[in-house]
Image 1 (cartoon, rainbow over the protein chains, first blue to last red):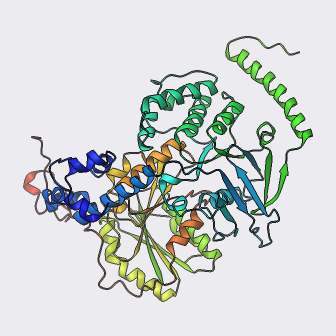
Image 2 (image 1 turned 180 degrees about the vertical axis):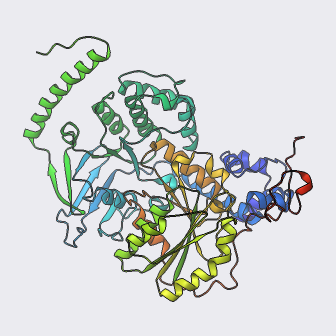
Image 3 (image 1 turned 90 degrees about the vertical axis):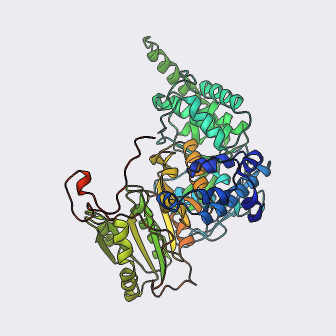
Length: 333
Length: 230
C-alpha cells in the first residue's frame, strides 16, 4: 500500500478491498462517492466546506494511507500471543535497588499486588503498559515472551498490553447491551459478531447474580451486572493479554468464576486488592513499597487452608445475601 | 527552549495532565514555564504556582480565544526565552471544536476525555485532526470496552498521531508523555515567520463589532444563513 495507490484508486474499490475504510470516511464526515478517488473527492468540496470542517486534501490523503496501513498491520498479524511477561528489577523511589531479580508471569496466571495507596502500584502498571526498557523512573525492564518487545506495544492503540477493570468504572454510553457489544465487536473488527455477543451475554449472566437481557440499557444494569458484563466483555473481546483488576467488590458477582473466565481466555491477571479472598487466589503476591517491589510472597500451604475457611464463610454470607434478596428471613446457626 | 502547545475541549483534564507531566520534567531537572489561556476567568494559574512554575495567564474576554492565542503567541515565547526555561507550555481551551491553535514545527498536544462520548472525535476539527499527540483522560471511570471504542474512534480521525492514555489524578502515563514532549535537540528562538497548521475559524460581521439588534437589516460582513430548504 503506497501513496500512489491511494491517490489513483476509486473509493468503491478501496472500500471493497478494505471494508474498514468506510469507518474512516464516516468519522471524517466525508461523502461516500464511489466513482471518485480520494483526491477527486477532496477536489469536489469547495474551499469553504473544507475550511469549515477543518480538513485538507493532503491531510486526508496521507491519513487514509496511515489508517489503511495500520489496520492491515492489525488484521494481518494473526496470533502474536503473549505467553509470558517478565519484570526485571529496577529501583525504589530513593534510588536503592529492587532485590527480586526477575519475575516471570505466565499467561493463565494470577498475581496479586498489595501495598498502600501511593506506594507505587500505578507506577508498576505504567511500566507494564509502556513496556519500560530501563527508561522510566523505576529503571525497570519489561520483557514479553522472554524478549525485548516490539515498539507496537508502546504506541499502537490496537496493541494495548493492559486492560483494566475497577470498582470505579461505569458504563456511560446510552446503549442497550446488544448495541454496546456490537459497537465494541465492530471496533475490534470481529467477524462473527452475533455469536460473540451471545457468548458474552451468557458468560456475563453466569457471573451476575441477577440475569439481564440484550435489550437492557447498559446504564441501568446493577453494580454486579455491570461488573459481570465488563469482565465477560474484556475476557472475550479485548485483545489485551494482561488484565488488571483493581478491587472488585464482592456483591452481586461470582468473583472466582470471573477470574476463571479471564484465565480460560489465556489472560495474565494482575490483581490489586487487599481482600484476603482475592489476594489468596493468586499464587504470588507482589508487595509494593516506596515506589518499588519490596518482595514477592509465594502463597503458602497454610494460607491456602485459610482460604478454604474463608470460602466457607463467604458462601455463608452469599447464601444470606440471597435469602435477603428473595425476601426470606435469616437463621443464624 | 522547547515550546509545546496543549489544547482540548473544556474540562477534558488539560491542567491535570500538564501538572503531572511537569512533575515528571521537574524530577529530571528541567525548568518549565506555563502560559494559560482562557476566556473569562481561571484559577489554574494558582495550581501551576503551587508546583513552583512561572505562569502567566491570558484572558480573551469578548474575543475569540483562538485568535487571542495566536495574536499573543510570539510574545509569550519571548517571555519564556527571557526566563531561560527548558520547556514552555501553552494551555488553551478549545471552545468551539473548530479551534486550530497549532503551529507548524511546534509540538501540538490535544487532550480529550473518555466521558465526552464516542461521537466527539468526529465533531472536533483541526484541534484533534492535526495534533501530533493525543492524550485521552478519565479512562479510570469508564469501562474497558468504552475506552477501546473511544481510542479507535480517535485513531480513525487522526491516524498519524500518537495516542496516549494519561490519568490526571494518579499521573499514570504522565511520565511517558513527558518523554514524548521534550527533545533536547529542539531550540525554539522565535516564532517569527512560522505558520498555523490550519486557518482559524473566521468571523467578521456586524455582531463582531458589537451589534446587538436582531434582524437582517443589521447584518453585515461575513454572514451565513441556515439552508432551511434542505
